View 1 (cartoon, chains in turn blue, red):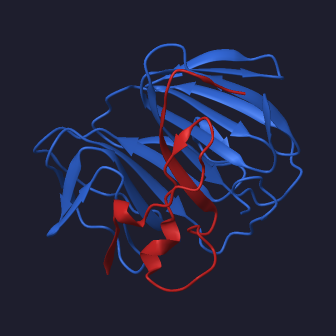
View 2 (spheres, chains in turn cyan, yellow; view 1 turned 120 degrees about the horizontal axis):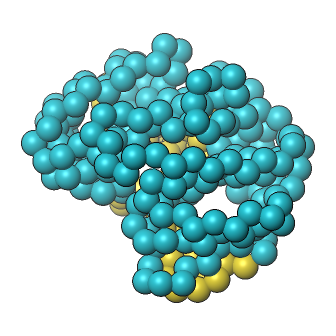
Length: 187
Length: 55
């Protein structure tokens, strides 16, 4: 097992299956639709194992507002192929299935080829859109797998899926207090 | 103004048991800043994990 400290970590698997095991006693397979949020706080030990095939996943590291918080592990099962935006995670106190000790909201969507979709607006937050798989077009800009897009002054215009796509959308409070004490996020 | 971060902006600093591509969200600013995060969101790791244990 290995330790994480002061990182808020969302594991988002979209292909394959990863097996999680931790010192808190949880042992759980994580695959598409199963989300894991590890709020490492003062210390959290775990291991990841891949038993069959390979796994494609995104690990999102978020700086908490403060170091040495309580260690927490959260799991949430969501629809696998939601066409519309699905709110995965948000700050403590928000109405979201997974909670982050930071002013960040995380959403996902799986628009199909040819579908046009709106990008929501969160007042006071900056958007950051990341394409995990597939390709979308916004205005005359094509954004493909592992590419991202933001607009720091204006809302992001509507997008069109050029293929079946998986997208993650972040909203970030650029004025939030953060700690740089995270093992990964603090680097 | 819309700003795009291409896959060419990715770094790959980790050579351990997991193959990791690290994305530097701050590259989207197109300016010299030391911090590689968009404030609280530090980085993403689109990674392909082969059959193994990351212990």
